[in-house]
Image (cartoon, rainbow, N blue to C red; front, side, top):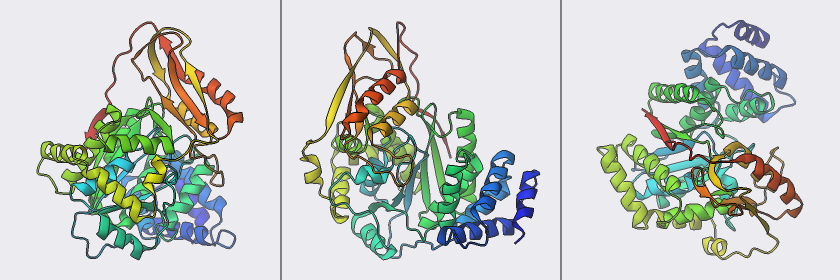
Length: 439
């Protein structure tokens, strides 16, 4: 393969053929397996990614790359699973613990949910890091073991296998270190390439937009959602996307263990209204896409019933136990070694700004996230928000509590939190949590 020719053609704004993208995916998979001896080195793959970032991809190129990524490794199949297979995905947010709620909720409503998740890298949290705050939980499985978990419990949440869509693992790593992550065409191929390889038939995708999202522009997010739906359809899958706001963190907890606690609150009929509302809407759209409800109204009713009667909480507990986790030990854990600091409002007024991106970054500073894949994560680190945008505050009122096992980081995190909030005399205009649905 004359890889420099592919780079030049894309650099000049030309479209690559389907076979070209299959060769690109194969080269990326080779590099993922043997970086030192791969026929196409990292710098050439990176050059092509930058050319694609700057010049864009035609629709047929996105479709070809998506299929090539899906075919670059093993494909998961689920023999013996009679339930409709549904997968849930988020483009990443701050305080986004929705997978911990939506996955067992969908399963409680009759779906089979094979959920493969990732870790935190950057200001957004990772589902696997959150779950690892539960003692004993296992997240790495062979395909046959995943099939057993799915048959027995109706769902699982596990890590990606290195054999599943290896081209995406390589391309994502190179995008992350070459400032080409936020390319809508490459994002589509990355998300759906993995989803196709994981074997679900219907996808519900939460596309975040706003200050704390990967793509801040709502117009860009709408284009991304439409492309996700169209590519899914052309690959024989059903997809629905919700555009939801990420201007402020979702819920009141940002971190790892604190987000698991909040997810359990929602599963037990409590918890913040924004988390509960978005979880129910995602579950309803997933049920409708999977053919488990005749209408969105009946889907919402079914999801609400299964959340309120404890069925989803029971599925979650069963899933955690099946994967080796000790939920009782998690809820009764000691807080030894964890230090906290209250942050007070500097003046009276309305909370007008609660910047999700800045809060995500300060949570990383506390130890809840990672800047590189080698960084260790502190399960106890996090932020508990005691006020949200639009609420009336009095001077000295506690806005948030920061907590960490690394006390030397508290001062810097407290200064960062002060920069993430804005208080004014006028009450801000309310903003919709869900902007629109694309299906």
